[in-house]
Amino acid sequence: MQKTFTMLIDGVSYEVRRYDACKHVCVSLEGRNFDQVSGDLQRKLLAYMSGDNEQGEVMNTPVPIIFTVFPRDDGSLNRRLVAALRIPSSFQIAPPSPTDSSIRIEERPGMTVYSEFRAEALRLMCTLGDSAPFHRKQYLCCIYDPPIKPYGRRNEVWFLQDEP
Image (tube, rainbow, N blue to C red; front, side):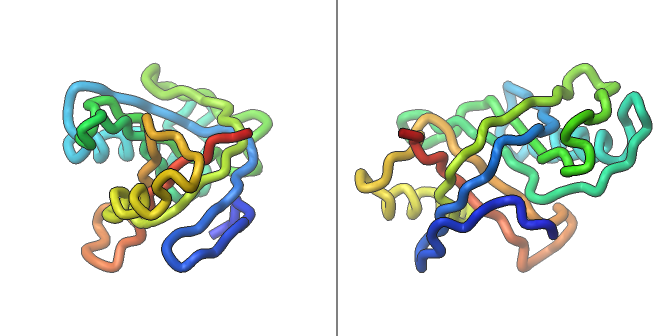
C-alpha cells in the first residue's frame, strides 16, 4: 500500500496525519441509512476503478474508501452519505471520465486529520474534547479491507482539523 500522508503525531489514542490536495472519484446518495447505502456506493466506485469509465482504464484501487458522514446534533447520522476513493498518482493529471452520471471527479484540498477506528468515533470526539480544533458537522469513515473480510478488518474515523 502506497503511503499518501505525512504522520504528524503518532499518539497512543489517535494519530494526526497530513494529506496533500489531490483528485478523488466521488459518489453520493441520500434517503437511506449508512448500512443500506455504503455497499451500493462502494460498488459504484469499484466499478469505475475496474474500467467502467469512458477510457476503459483499469486502475489499482487505493485504500481507504472514504465515507463522509454528517452527524446531527443528537449524534445520529443524517441520511446523506458521500463515498470517495483517491485517484491513483499515475491518473491524477487526467483521470478517466466516468460513464455513470452519478460519479464525479473532485479536487479535494489538503487536509489534516485526527484518525481513530470507526467504532471509536464518540471516544475520539471525547478524547479531543475542546483541546483540538476540528470540524464537528461532518467526519470521515475509512474502510481499508474488502466487505467480505469477516474479521480483523481495519476501519478508521477521521475528524478534519480546523485549518488556521
